[in-house]
Amino acid sequence: MAPLCLEIVATSGRCAERATAAGADRVEACQALELGGLTPSLEVLEMILEHAPARGVHALLRHRPGNFHYDAEDRAVLVAQARSLARSGVHGLVLGALDASGAVDSLCLQEVTAAAFEVNPELEITFHRAIDEATDPLAILDSLFALPVDRVLTSGGKESAVDGLAMIGRLAMRSAGQIQIMAGGGMTAEAIAQAAAYGASAVHFSAKQPWARTIGVDGEMVGLLRHSVDRAMSATAQLTSEETS
Image (cartoon, rainbow, N blue to C red):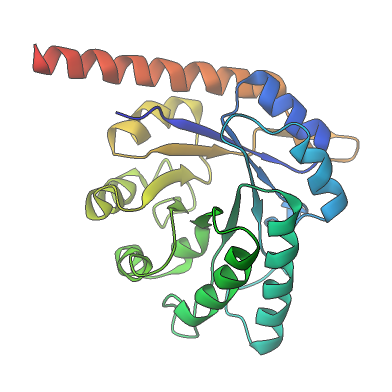
């Protein structure tokens, strides 16, 4: 089994430095967490990239708060931002788009990812928690198989991933390794082992604390999460060994 990835949200260079030092495997770069997260400025992103962990920095691509239904003007902004982010040196993009019916907006995703791949064809693509806005997350996943998506970030259609673990397990089973499933949104350290058991390949945390009148990463919290991830992987390896002996 591949190691469970610990992804931490960073809104500044200092956040990324704390996250990486405390054991984060990957960082999601964004701004305005109080709005659910928006595309980071290139200046902030440059500082975050200076502290990239082993699995790199993935940038959120979301130019405005609100829903994930984008019109022509929205798409033009997303395409432009995708190119800029790809040129910045990030290792992946985090994005999502739904049509008016709540299904995947495949044309929008194809247009935006194509623009990014023109700059860097090696980028990884994560479909974010737009999947949790859908009435049928499994149908969303099925649509993503035909698109250049590497992983999905999901709380299993619930407010908290802890309450959505059963759906996360169903998504992982349906995916069968074609698309990685990352559990995030209201996750707790105590639920990490369960998420891994249900088939999640990564866990996503903001690990935030109030800092300078904004939201920053708590390095001590990241360290505790790192310990929980390592303990979960150790337990899984031991169980696998016992089953095969």
